[in-house]
Length: 258
Image 1 (cartoon, rainbow, N blue to C red):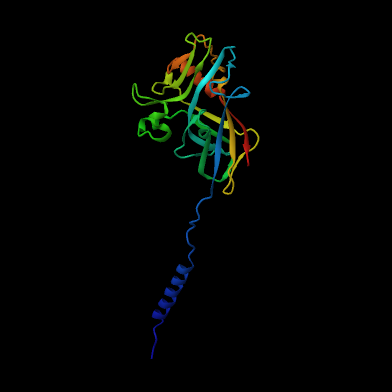
Image 2 (image 1 turned 60 degrees about the horizontal axis):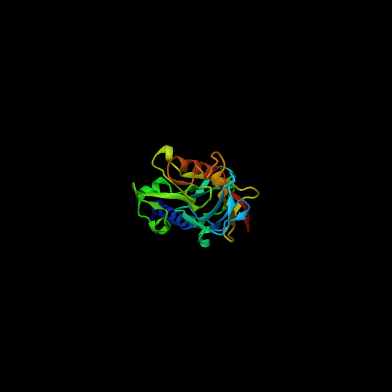
């Protein structure tokens, strides 16, 4: 009796194919490692902590003043690496309010592990988010940082207080506006870490200790005298304060628990 080699060979090839299929490496489904960190904001006036309504300070012009309200938006938080790559923290919108200590600790989760050399953020609410509407949480109008006089708009930074040098004795700095290039007060701040990188790891939570110095609002490229600039709600004087803000309001002091 003759036997055909073809069916036998086909069986061998089929078995080999099954063996290769069974040994095929499964795709790597291990989730990327992530960690978290906290951006802590300490509001100060020169070397002193900001004390709402209780302490009297002096700006570089020698004007005495007290502060009763100080709050601002930080958004679009971005971590930067030495190779110039960056990670944007999704949906990062925060309202820092001196009257609410809990608002001064901004916790970021789900951050890719890595060594980061600096941090950046927007002071204010970017125009794209403003135009999108549906304002809830820290963007809710009840937070006292929202205008709707000529369409939706946010106050990026608000400082209120008193000064004997002010003609009205009051201080009102509502730094707002984005609709026109000449009156846009949204600013981006980029801060390198001065001494050590931020080490984001899965097993610990470092803290970036950052200061916001109120005095810097009134110094820099546009020195402010309360005798002439004491009530600004958008417009050219708010742009001057926004430029001062970008020039030096924020600084990184140190990083905890790296």
